Image (cartoon, one colour):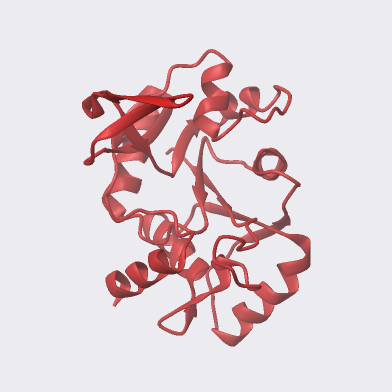
Length: 220
């Protein structure tokens, strides 16, 4: 039977929110946003290994939230690195699953169908990401000019991004550079083809106060 390790990255410090409390700890229905995210993966597979990366200065705060909310889902907490790349690489050293899912901690609205689609596809495709179509018109910027592009040729990428563990470990043997935007990009640089599955529209990355209000409404 295949096993999964889940890396949930929660290293943000909330700059776009304009508040001191990192967004992953902000409350929705009186519970920290991050707890909803972890629950989604626990419901997918209660035996999956869950590893949470956090800024070192916020580890104690998270442990207090766990106690105050009587949060029982088992997970390993590790100190995140200076960049997301370093956090994931450090977490990978602890992963023991056949497959690894990497998910943004501030995406609590990922649904079970998206997670299952990734879990099924990765067993044959080795490297899988969920995507959604772009519904609005797009323009490509070139200096002071711009031109319309065909939006049907593009997709918005979400998480969890899922990989056979050995493939992701090999990708992270590459040196860090500023062009790395996600795990799929790094895996692609290592020579592995990325496959896509359908994501869910609600699975937004919460980065603004408007996003938080949207999540509150859906989680109600």
